[in-house]
Length: 96
Image (cartoon, rainbow, N blue to C red; front, side, top):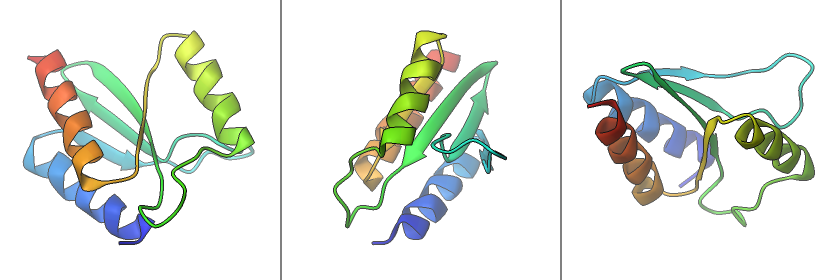
């Protein structure tokens, strides 16, 4: 499975569960998370990693993760369908 396949799976699961999903492309900011999710007023930022890869964040991604979580953001990393499903379940529980 490639990262784009995981991205498509994530998008479909969000749609199925009524979660607002957007792919993010941050201008002039390296390392910003790939996905923006919104459900019941709760925002999650998710970095997707290739299931074939190491699953490790780059230095830029680590910096962004630290900055975002320090400010109270709901930030997650997913490298598998199982991790995607866990994030969705957590968002659904938190927004109910």
